[in-house]
Image (cartoon, rainbow over all chains, first blue to last red; front, top):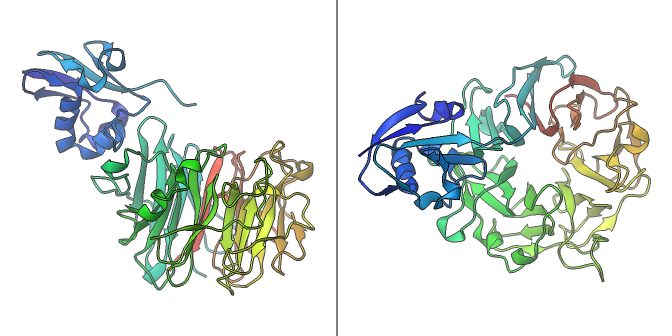
Length: 94
Length: 359
């Protein structure tokens, strides 16, 4: 299945300048598995988004079709075929 | 004269200042803008010009980067320079300290982090390994958090495998086997904020420094209390007489001359401003027996604190002294603190400064 991924512009230097991409993934994939796929090619991006325990950083949000995954099942939230997954920094700091 | 580099880490980026005479400074554009830079290490051993920074994004976490071209380019390993092993279940929150070891151990760099942990690199700061001896210490569950977080904020390497660390809160710990085993070394240091007799550990030591001439002599700026140890940290005695306050964060030792130290007093833990609203450093030339106030060139109207790593010395002759405030002002002295000149103004809060005479 194909999933559209939108990435934060602030991390473009970790993703070869890309802020969006389409990924071919197996069916029944989770957000965690999607991030694992991204991490293979973009390991620095992954460290910016997840800490070394694998947890999503506190001020990074992931939306699956507009729903923030912390309100769903967190990193084991399913990603359906054709979904749009957006990784974005939260409103924080000053 | 050789070029001196002054690296300034702030809440919102890193600035690099350079000078040929330590009087007139050129300030770079910001590096890592909008990213906190709480730790800097400058490694000039073996003719290197390596700059290491522990940066932390509020969104994207902490990392260690290094530059061998004075900030023209920055590198980090893809897998990261520092990260807890999986079995710990922990994650690095902030890198508080990046400290090159002595000249006879040219590849060794130490890091101190939040949560309280000490790390050792044997490849010049590109990869760090957790010191398990301290992480697995039976006291760890009882260490607390200072206002800034629970961190090993001071790592002071010494001769023959000796390293002293200071943590908030936990106090001073010492290893004599290069980091394998650690013992608390706080005898004589106050912990007024804890009930009962002074504990073996749990003190809120803000900064420690080692004497240049006698490596068994150490100095400590405590959360109220200024101390000296003449026995490698086994016992501490007060050297605060003659200071306007025994509170502050910084403790600097002269790298060339034994017995010379600088502190930057603040009024009290409940009043973290320079005494009288006038910024001054205080220097002792006799290991804390007497103190002299030095304020020439420093502001007479200053209500910002100087944080624990926002003061440093270089190894120039005479030694340079550098102070940065939470108001974003940075001052440099080319004459051991006798007089200061402004290096930078209106920066974000200064978290750390490090200076080196470049090879």
